[in-house]
Image 1 (spheres, rainbow, N blue to C red):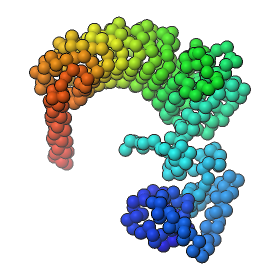
Image 2: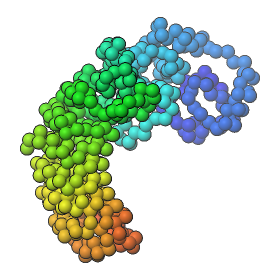
Image 3: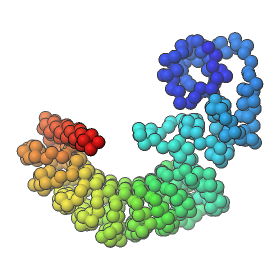
Image 4: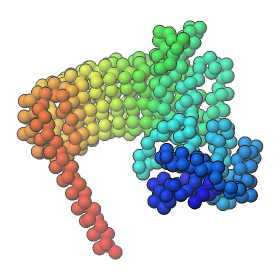
Amino acid sequence: MDFTYCEFPSTVSIDTFKAYFHLKDVRLPKGSGKSFDQNHQLYQEANEGQTNQAKSLRHLVLDAIVENWSELPLYRQLTRREDRNYILSHLDTQTLPLQLLSSYIHDDFFWQRCYAERWRSAPIQPRGRERPWINIYMERHVQEFIENMQTVDYELEGEGNVQATLDICGAYINQLEINQLQPASPTNDNNDHIPLDYLLSNLPDLQRLRLSYSTKTAGINYQIGCNQLTPKDILLLVKGLSQCHELRQFCIHNTKLMPYQLRLLAHSLDKGCHHLSTLSLLHCAVGDAGIRGFLETCGKESFGILTVLDLTNNRITEEGAYILSRTLRHVPLKRLVLRLNPIQSDGAAAIFHTLQAMPIREIDLSSCGITASITKLFMMLICQHTTLLDIDLSNNTMGEDFGKHLMKIMSSNKVLEELDLRNTGLSLTMRRKFQEILLRNIERKRHEALKQKQRDKFKAMMQL
């Protein structure tokens, strides 16, 4: 059967097609996007010249539309879905202007094809929370544009080049990830990166921002300090963040932050980003002075809806943990990550004491230099806390005695679901026993949830 001039819906999977047609009995168009095994491709190429079937007038017209699409973009005027599928499967996504494509085509599978042809690997989307592929494509396009822009080019062209890109992509950007910025040329006296204030100020729907001022491909432009955040950089960054009123998740990583920079950052996020729920400062060498500077800027009502705080690997000691514990009481945190910070047992004790009055669900204190001296406080936390679901104490020196004390009171906790005690001095047998207790908690919750669902269903039926 010859499908060369028949348009397959892009939603039909290969497995569905194989269920109805034998591969040796069919011929597919080259632009259909269907890929079969190599033997079938060779078989099809060998028999490609045996057909004498001429193209229909309809397909000749569609081919003419495709060839002249840049001058006369016809898509919405085509009423038949088959004709639109043919256009979408034959358009050249590499040469046609992005502005032209985004103005006329919003088909989700077309933009998925554009993404796959340009970057090969496609991101995995969580089931039930799929995002439009045109948004994903535009976000990756802006990311590549910003990461590859040289400071010299920005100085010569000004904001015009950025504005031209934003005119095309700005309406589709909800998430933005910038993993590197190009360093300034060695002829400059400073190490300023390209300004981000204009970019961030013109993204009104930005909800998630992940940013790093590190440099991965410095080349001949390398100079000492090119990976650091300069005074001009931080001023322009906080200026842009103050205009991101819809920002919900902010992460800056692999960028050293000084105490004065953290004060400016805290003020900008607190005053401009009223919906911020997740704050991550990863591998930023903040230190105790940085924590103090950040928190001194915040008041009791600051970050009133912050639920996730991630401070991984920031050289925070017990002093910083104590300062942090005094402020966390006013924040409705559900997840706190302090891993790879040498807070020691005294810092962990301050954190545990504060957690008693917080609705926290996850706490990560792995590789923090904690010893068995916090055994008593940890036992109190296990016995009294009613919302904590996940605890990570891996890579700390706890010892077998800590495990024995924990085993005695572990059965009294009916809430905890995850407890990571790897590389803490506990034997594998003891850790397996803890895992069995946690599995019973999970099964009990699942059973109670099912019973509650049945009761609610019965009440609804009785009301009818």
